[in-house]
Image 1: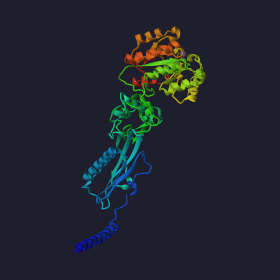
Image 2 (image 1 turned 120 degrees about the horizontal axis):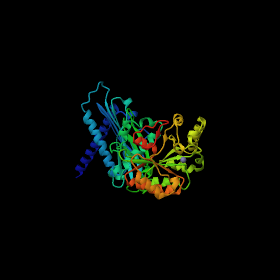
Image 3 (image 1 turned 180 degrees about the vertical axis):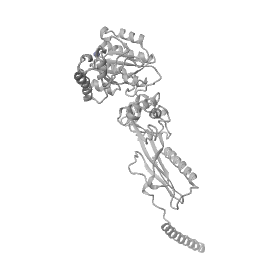
Length: 471
Ligand code: ZN
């Protein structure tokens, strides 16, 4: 027994000694062939967004390749497992592809770099963007989005926009994108190109790269998607504007509840379906214009309000409402006098007075004119910097002040492309509009602004041109 115990001790000492020797050798080996520290070009930039968890990386500097893959660790088991699987798949693919990589020089290596960003919606959703760079030139690595994934934090499962929204949510998103580009100075030029039209069409493919964060949906557009030679770009959309399409409460801060009222401002317009433009002259008028706006908003529609300049500053909140709800303002002169009887100076004072007063309240284009009484002559046409808009259905609402009569007249005569004349000065006109808007929609018409009507009907309006319908 005694002898044995001594033997055990001796063995233990010998093993310990061997370990020490091995340790020293290992350290020495490491000092001699120390792996490079990760080059700064491959490190995760400090500017990335990480709203949850921490990060990990895989770094391998081998004979003919370098892998520097960063990925997030969220602390949510299922999600972390899925993220790691995704990363492993990419690194395996890369290794397989470049196992036989033939370098041009002894120093050249194939590089795989992956970066990420993480966004979250409280404890409801979590989105990850992965960006990848490959190449042999460390100085010129170009990180590009390769995948975005959104998870339900509770279930750990991946969710698509079609789980979060229902109905025509994609069309709505597309409409917002198109509207924003049309409105912006930089976007205007590309917004009418076929590339832009195809690239923003409401297809799953066009909107496949996105993340969700507190109260926003961020969409990433790929290079060449919006314009020839365009780079990656992002588009931010407030979830509030998509509340009508939400399947359940969006648990951001504050919570956004699914809404029964759709917001106007970027409606989906189908160019292949019938459409008409409702136009309201002589306003705005308190108690009337706002009733019409409400009816339009509740029906996801928009109209054109040809305002009289002298009424603008006294009704600034109505002017603001007209625009913020996606409607259009047209010019109905400053003092509601006939354009044909004006001198050139008077003409420009009348027209510019409206534009200036409206823009003192809210920035918007006022670039169509409705001549007072529909009166114009060659001189007015020559002088006008803007198109002149008449109508194809005259409700004579100012004469009869009868909602039933207005309603019947429009419903009996309406055709695709009509421009319908009303006045937002009378209770009866507001009442008629409240009935007409849903009834026209029921009949298959989309209710659009004059500019939208012309755009979707492919009519290019010229300065001084006269237009009375979209036909
Ligand atoms: Zn008028």
